[in-house]
Image (cartoon, rainbow, N blue to C red; front, side, top):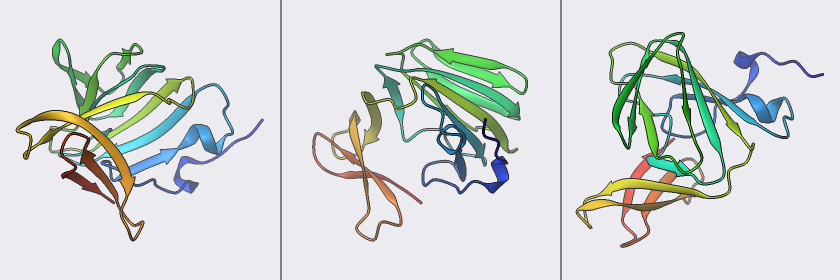
Length: 155
């Protein structure tokens, strides 16, 4: 058994102001779990994405998250849960003026096959992306796989 306090965990860099790796802190082997806090305009993910090898559940604790899906936008309010099957594209975000708090659970724990799409101004399209650390290692960058242009910067 292992027990932790979410507030005792360090934040990871990314598109959410708070992302804490609950599953890895508990040494979970078969599922991943992250705690998120999204300020207005923030997102759970670096882009519209699908995990070919992982299903994901998002449980909204407080606020209202909007998920872009292949079927259109879906709103998930406090006390509600949404599931995405492996290979299903989605991106959750906070479109409100209030904070969103949520837990994300994925299995298996480490997704190794993820497709991330973001708008690329250079390509004038939503294109595949790669994520890499900035030279100073203080930010993460998303870069268009097609043309190499930076499409996002996250600290």
